[in-house]
Each structure stands twice: as structure tokens, then as C-alpha cells.
Image (cartoon, rainbow, N blue to C red; front, side):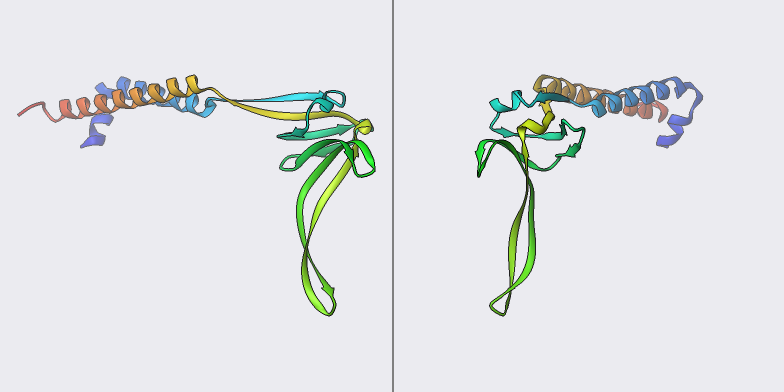
Length: 164
């Protein structure tokens, strides 16, 4: 019965309106309330930062591209016997070694040290959330769904012949 209401010729314009409204809500929600920007820093700008968060990639002066997503990157004025370096921690690796006749698991940190003098640019991805847009979007979607639900019930009620 519900689908017969939608298939009636006189209801086709209303169904088209519902479809276009749902498509509009889908497009609005797929855009979301998050803004992602990529900022470029030169090697001189990095001296002001201690810990670099959300670095997407690093470009060296010789043109080498280093993918840095998911890696922890820190700037150190002094690191060991080096100065002004970027330290890239890629994670940990576990290896098995034999010490004194016993097999032992050792955890080794995977690190790369890049002198700041070799770095041309560092790209950092920043994500910003808009609370106002999120609130407006949530309320708008809720109101839209409520209106569409009421409209569908009224159409079904009218198709059934109304009250009693």
C-alpha cells in the first residue's frame, strides 16, 4: 500500500521533490563541517616549532620527497652530536636475537635524522572543525527528515481515504 501511493501519477511531482531534497541533504552532509588545509613551512620557520604534528610530507633541497604521514617528527636544536635536525620516528620494529644461548625479542626504534640545512619545505596538514556549521547542519537535517516523514504519512493517509 505504501508503494502504491508513491507510484500514483498525481504524486510524481511530490516524489521528485523528496528525491531532490534527499540528494541536497546528502551533498550537504558529505561536505561536512571539517576544513582541511595544507600549510607550507620553510626550514627557517621550523626552528620556532618543537614538535611537528600532522606532517604530510617533506621536500629536501635535492628534490627528494619524503612521505611523513603517520610518523612522529620532532625538531631538535641539539640531537646527539648533530645540531638543527629533524628526527623522524617511523615506529618500532621487533627482531629476534640470540643472547647467551637464549632467543630474545628486542625492540628497535626506526629513526631517520635529517639536517635542517637539507630541508627545503615541510607540509603540515591542519584539520579545523566548525561547531556552528555542525549545529546548523544537524538541526537542518533533523527538521528536513521530520518534514519528509510527516509529508509521507499525510500522503499515505490521504491515499487510504482519510478518517473513517
